[in-house]
Amino acid sequence: MVQIENLLTYLYVQSYGLKVIESLAREFKTVELVEQCSDFFKLKVPRGENTIGSLFGLIEDKKADCAISEYSVSQTSLEQIFQNFANVSIEEKAALTFELSPTDHLVLLNPDKKKCISQNIDGSEKPLASKSKVFDDMDKTDDEKLLQH
Image 1 (cartoon, rainbow, N blue to C red):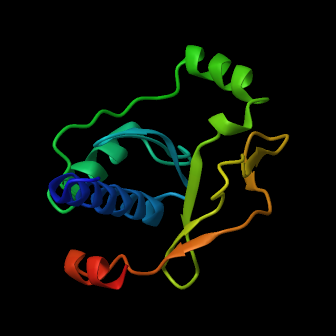
Image 2 (image 1 turned 60 degrees about the vertical axis):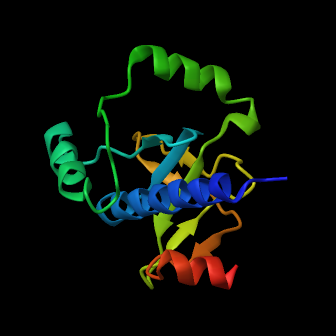
């Protein structure tokens, strides 16, 4: 049996995690949830024309709204690149990938956790066709979400 306090903590962490993902999706084409353990979220965004400094600024601006207590920003290391090559054949290791829909809702592109981003020859990313799930209750209060579900 799940204790109510643990359930509420879990829902709180998930709602603010989705809020961070939604904030990043407004600035970047896609956001990948690479790893999550409790209130630790490891996210990946395409660099594009943005600098690391601009990403720091964005997170600092959203820190209070998204209940972020600690964070770090870094470029992909050479070790991470080699790890990604090793994980290509392991579909379960793929990250959850989010983007904003034209109607300004957060969309999960790969609910089955299968890779949904592929690389073009020029290094740019292109989404692969996949199922999607729309998170359309992001603007509701936590009480409304709990009552709805």
